[in-house]
Image 1: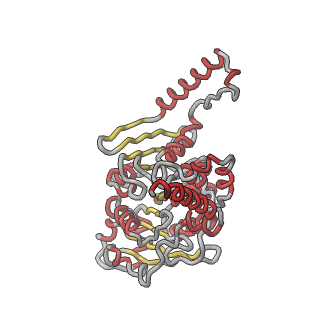
Image 2: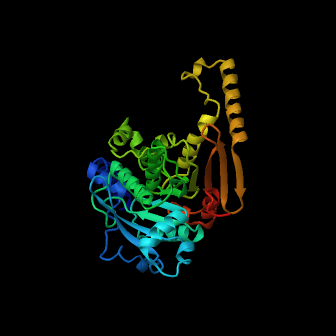
Image 3: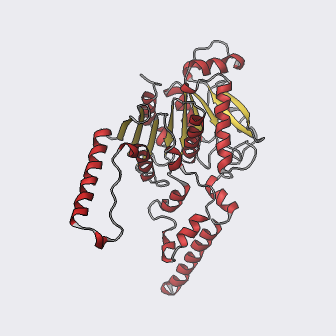
Length: 385
């Protein structure tokens, strides 16, 4: 009986798989799958009282930020612990500007499927405030939380810029602001970094937590079980994978964006056990910064039969030279029971610094919650001694 049912079960699973892939080509369903903004619908009073989520009394200002295209974004401005404990009498009219002018600030751009009131976001922002003594502006993109509108790639870029401009209008110095993005938010952060550099501004730095190189590569490499890529079964059908990838509308091309960030200091952090976005995405982003400082990547003739002995020797010599150049530039430090950091100074771009942090644990959602990562970020950007 079991053997007779097996072919029907296999056929059903196959039909379900291809139906799911087909549905993901529908723009509306595709947007829901990428942004997941409907997972955490706003509850009455969920955002007006941050204290209900564990933040200290009168430490957080609930905001509604306007965007240039008429949307309104829900946001929290969280005072640095250092400032919060230094005041005797609380007055937001005074405290907002004074906190922004006297202490560094983190602009936090969260992942898909999150809001500023989600437990992971609250914990992350609370750690920034306490462990790094930084103010935090946590913003919900359009269509997330109590923000108006519907999400799109261009919309999220507009929202991040609106949050940045709000900080500057209220007294923040660009050199005191670190932009931190997690996963989807890291792509938004990278694009924001490009835009503000075009305006001649330089933030204190940019942090990319669990980033992907692009949505297309994420779709290509991410698997439902954390190992087998979701689209791999399509390989049995010629060009089927390419067809599906062409239908993906939001691109969130982080790799292209980082190539255009020329002056900001950068930290990329990724957990080796991230089952949502493989750590190889961060390796690719790190090498996008490093690549221009290395000898050109060697190539072989497309026809293997055309490779002569001289061609092969030249190729292996160029590979060795490139590896040695990377070894000379990158300082690698293994931290016992934590992970590995790799850092270099970009001499082509004003000696800005770029660091990759690969942790042993943390998964996809908690890489930034690790004290070790927080301390690295704090020391790298001068928050901590």
